[in-house]
Length: 166
Image 1 (cartoon, rainbow, N blue to C red):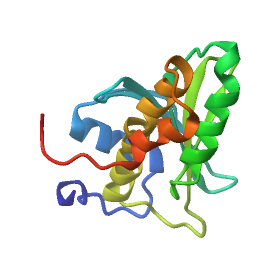
Image 2 (cartoon, rainbow, N blue to C red):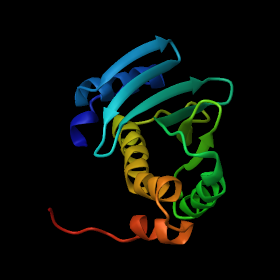
Image 3 (cartoon, one colour):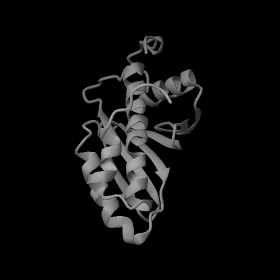
């Protein structure tokens, strides 16, 4: 995303950069606080709620991407097994299920220690990777929770690449 590499200030706040990226994509967003922004991004399967928060003490830009999920209680063991299998396939974040909130969550933290500054293209890719992971594994979670697929069979959906357009 070369179009996003127009921010060049050493004093810019990471959430300001996120806001610029969100505005560039015309995503709905709300600056919740100086250190936090929330947005909605439309995917193929869902609209994903994305929150990014800057922690100056830890120098980490945290991304949380969520979507609603309320699996039947008897399917939770299969869901947790699919979560483990999915997390084995990704390196730039991980899934967890927040049962009380009924949310599937993708989490990632970008360390910006030593006054490092994230480029807009880096933040754009961070958000894009979160959406791609959710899109890739959403069918697996569905098959494990509402289908009769075993966790391994559910994962076969995510591991096979689709080519072309239907």
